[in-house]
Length: 156
Image (cartoon, rainbow, N blue to C red):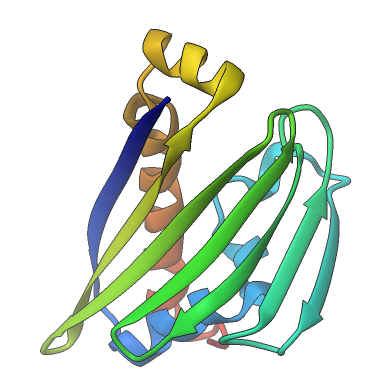
């Protein structure tokens, strides 16, 4: 067993409240999440609160997208914490954190995922580090989030 932490940061030319709104509402995730295009037939289910604490999002897709769910467990102007659970292609749970640090007209956004590698993931983790596996996805997602937040025609 081993713990992991993957983190990436980007600066967005938009107010923190706008960026926060795109993360705090799972209905906005298809517009920026790096994993949404893994399966064009991805099944999505939203439940619980519309946004913020208690908002729940579950998905089921092909082998690349897998099956899992997310729930927002904490939401403030400064950060959002999400409990993430994968069921397929492997079982795992992680904690995801988005931190929003305003700097004038810009916002520094940090995306971090932490968790424990167990079972087959622990074996796989010895071969390939989670940072190399997930880091590029975080970079892609943050770039898409930046584009969405800076595009004034997109609600958020």
